[in-house]
Length: 77
Image (cartoon, rainbow, N blue to C red; front, side):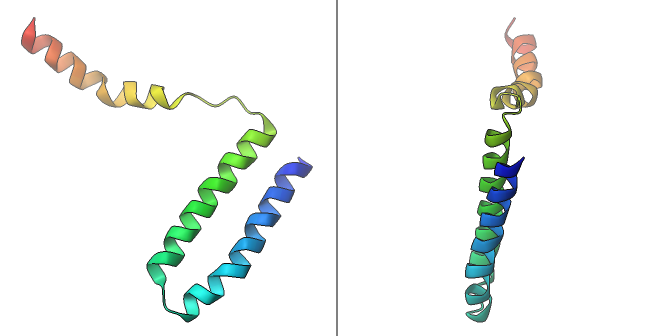
């Protein structure tokens, strides 16, 4: 739990350090991308540190392409 708090504090410090400069220079898109990437990195780091069981990304691909696969199966068989 302590490691997750340290990661979140480091992410907050990085945001406090970078975002004011981006906003002053009116770089709105860069600020948005920075926040998205920082949030994704912090999330992945917290999940890795807390050693939670996460599903495979392959499962999402199977869910998305399952109906397409079934459609092709019906067409060609």
